[in-house]
Image (tube, rainbow, N blue to C red; front, side, top):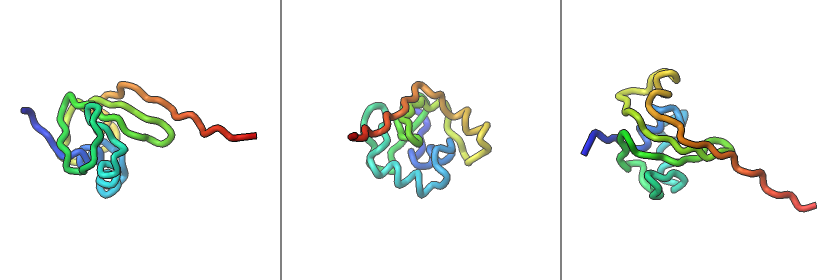
Length: 97
C-alpha cells in the first residue's frame, strides 16, 4: 500500500478549504465521497489515485489525487496535487409561482 495522509490535511494542502478546521468539519459531515464511499471521519486516509467527490460552492467536483504535499504551499503548487475529472453545477431550487 502506498503513502497516505489524512483527508482533512490533504484537502487543506490542496486549498479546497481555507483552514484545517473547515476541512475537518467537511470530512466529518458526510458531504465528501472517497472512491464512491461516504467519508464520515477526518482521519480517513487518502493517497495518489484516489477519487474525491466534494461540494465546491454551488457545484460538485470530482478530483483524482495526483500527489501528496508535506506543507500548504501557494495555489499554483496546490493545483499540482489533483486533476479535476468533472464539475457539475447544481440547479437552483424551483420557485413556485
